[in-house]
Image (cartoon, rainbow, N blue to C red; front, top):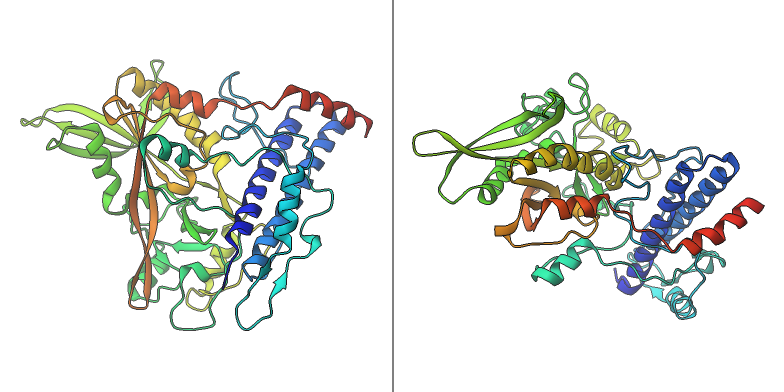
Length: 461
């Protein structure tokens, strides 16, 4: 199938801008006491979500896929902000300035109209179809701001890293009609890995792990304990935009690759070391600052501990409902491996903003500040798709670094008719602690004039 990349990139960038505007209005609504103004702000956010859904349908149309509409958030659903300090703002930590009210740019509007007229050649002998005017409403806003560069793009410019960055927005996965071999990129359900194996893996080993609800990734006990020890949610990774996204921290323990990588940052080459998991860290008052995911301990030639470093694992949260498709799949794993979940409400997908606010930032503030005061290094294991949503971090040389960001992907490995995912380390980004914390807790305010112009309009409604 021929896909017009310019058209996909345009729709993808527009969807990202709409998401940023939606989040800004929802955040403003959370701080407004007047119920009428709050309701209006929430309605504006809901309108932005509806336009995001329209763009998603347009992307599906370009790809020649059947489209479906994501269930928009209820107007009463107000995002809860993390109460860390008075310096933490309610605007998303990874947002860049976006005009709250923008007028269509003539050049961009003309470009969009030209793209609308582009013909898309589809599969299966279907005739060429042109995108219809209804793809975007006539009063949809075309922001003047260009899409901000991603975190990895900026680091690529400064360090010369070779990175592949994907754009676009799609939750629809197209299955193949064959009953022999199925690519993980062709599914219509969100489950990439269940209890460590792909949903189509029929091997005796995969069936044994499913039936006993066991974890193959070095959990503290043989069984999966995610969510609930007796009824765990055994989803290691979700499929999102045709790629697996790690949603379970234990998934990063495959072959203990993260400890080998972190040791190369913490210690000199050749140093003997061992590891401990889930080590509690306390402050000067005896209060818990949380558990360190993995602690690496270095020894001298006599077996005396001489140094240590801390590994923090960061995974995406899940928005939507992952339990229902998981439970349905587990009723008959072989029979339901090709289930179509795309039309179900509350389709699960990764939530990076909540993960950043409720996990990454608090851990850097509480655990990170203690480690920093001790002059101990920290390594962060993170999925590439998550890292790319972070605000701009300032990279430094390895010798100057206090934090190392080890960026991992799940690589699809095909062995005959069996497919599996394996953890692969990609790039490493080195940063300083204070600069990183400032970047992650900073907000990027819009022009105050835009907000001042908005208030009278809201008050008159």
